[in-house]
Image 1 (cartoon, rainbow, N blue to C red):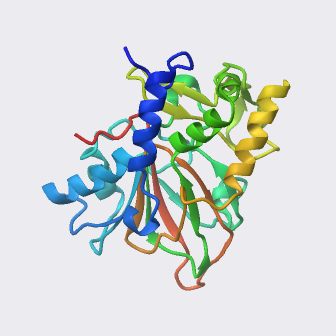
Image 2: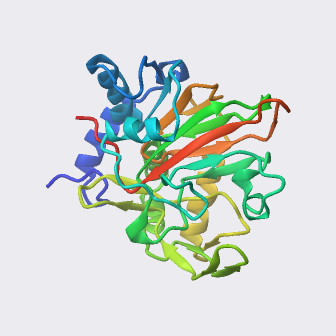
Length: 290
C-alpha cells in the first residue's frame, strides 16, 4: 500500500507533501476554535476542532466554561483519548497539575514545575516504545502574569523539511539507536535504564510519530555524521522564524489538543495572587477525528 513515509516510495511522498503544505494552517489565529461546553461538544464544534487536527495535528480551543480534571478527561474522550499515561507525579485521575513548586522538592527537581524556559521537545521522549505519548491535552486554568508563551510546530512539517533537505537525514533519525536517554538514578523516581529509540517512527496504522528533545544534558545522539547533521538542521529549523511555527500564550480557558506536536515554553513570572496552572493529560492514543 502507498506509504508517504517510506523512503522508497517517492511518488506517495510527493502526493502527501503537496497536500500537506496546501492544507497546513499557517495563520496562528486560525488554530483557535471557540467552544461553549467542553463536556458536550456540538457537532459543529467537533467538526471545527477536527478539521484543524487533520491539517496540522493540533488545535487550540477556547472556552469560558469551567474545566477540571474530570471534564478534561471527558473532553479528550470525545476524540478517542482514553489511555492516560499516568506518570508518578500525576494526580489520582492520571492528569498532572503543572505549576511552580517551590517547597515540594520532588516536583521542583523537574523543569516543568519551575518558571524556567523549556526547550523544544515532544512529550514522553524518555518513555518505553510501548508507552509512547501519541495524544495530549494541555489546558490552561490560570495563565502566567508575564511570559509563559508556547511555540508549537506540526511534527509532520518538521519531517517534510528534513526529508526535502536530505532523505538520508530521515533514514538516520529513524534508526533504533538514533537517540538515547542515558541511564540515571533519581532519588524520587528510582532507577531508569538507558532508553534508545528513533526520532521518527510509524504506528501500526502508518501514522508518523516523533520523539525528540533539544536538551543536551539528558540526551545522547548517535555519533555518526549524518545523524549529527540531521540534528543540527532540525535545531536550525526550530530556531528560524517560519509560518509553520506558531507562537501563542494559553490564557485561562484555553488549551492545546494535539498529536504530541513539537512545542516549547518561554520563561515566565507568576502573578503572586494567581500562579500559573495548567492541566496536562498525556495519552497512549492518537486523536480520532472521525
